[in-house]
Length: 365
Image (cartoon, rainbow, N blue to C red; front, side, top):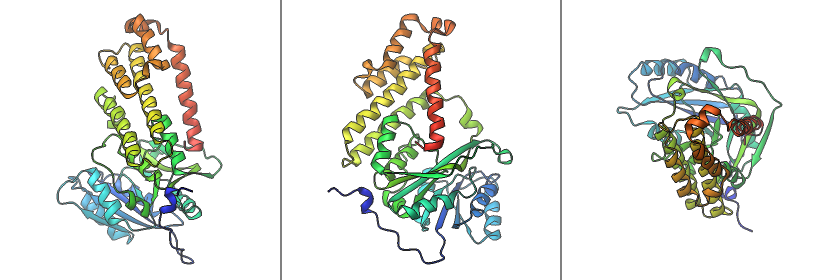
């Protein structure tokens, strides 16, 4: 019988009676002094775990050094260090995760994000009950103001776990990332085994990391409670440029290719590659379709998206999105936009996406 990758993990040593699970929370900070105290407090207030906060100031030009010094002086669980020269976010992430963290579990938390109350204890419980689980995540809530966090409906508490290769297949089928980042807790031994974030994947590095972890361990999800708050800031709310959309499509394709190339032992590896390529091609074609519906061909080069889809998935012409694009080309973008003749199919697709998002809140998939 083949060995499951998770069976190769070093088993956690039995916990001494009375010892709480330990969690190191790495907080990279660059010019986010204003947000840092609330972020750190959301960690220190976590019940049921022994936490340590590791703040890395990547040569901020604001008053981050003074704020870090105050936080360190106020609580012995907080430690800080400052770079002499700016190293960038990827190098800072990897320094904290691979060189500094040493607890049972590790979290990477942006200085402007927050952990939800009880999130770490809930994740630790999943790890303790399932030794082969290498990563646990939960529901993330998007917000813009620390002082006005959105109200969230609480659902019955529960957990799900998946074999790593099953979780990977779901990601390949959708080609999308279902995780933002602050809601993730990783078993430190697994994080240090798979290594750090890759600087050549700035648009899809998170997705690649989750897949890398799932290739060597099982995955857990905590239902019914929020795990973290992810701040949506002005820059992230700006209109996305076509170049960034295209970079996202290309890097998502590169991520799935890399996972297959580096883990040929995955069940049906080449079938998984084809599933991801098909899903990414469908995404590119639908973007081209919507450019016609909105008469935005000056902003979105639909022909390039169609060419990308064909290069990614040779059978793209057989997809319904390609046929939809062909119908719109016959009518022309101006007429499509004026008449909204294809409004019904778009409404159906939006409805499916909404339903999928609601199910994700419950299932985590």
